[in-house]
Length: 155
Image (cartoon, rainbow, N blue to C red; front, side):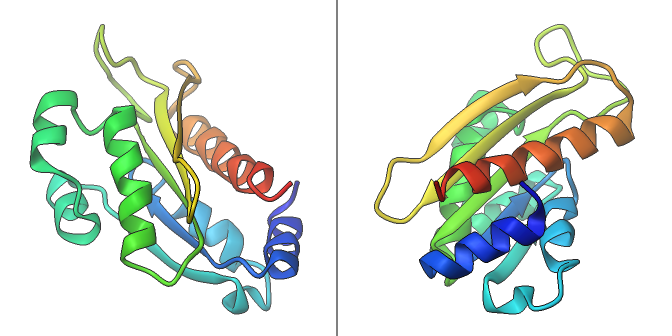
């Protein structure tokens, strides 16, 4: 589903959207705001690349960062829930991952954790290993998956 269709569906259901992005650096928000008229649906985007930004802007727990690391489902959950809490949105999607180059045995290049928070519902989290596709392709794949999560949330 395209960004335009996501916005149309959100408009139909009366939803406002926020994004909380780390590895995608605002690409999800850009995809949505590239569409004319998105301001009636898109509330705001948080680009929280550093751990401190996650803490300051989204109220991610320093303990979660210490215990799980920034690239974790626990932190993705707190990012999405923090975006809801710090916005006027009904839906928030979060991305945090390792676009590359690099990574580790435990957190390889291409691993991205996602969360989708929706008011009144349990937050959905998942991890996808896109593989070492290269930085640009991992970020694009993560953007596309985040948009798909938004689309699926409005079925």
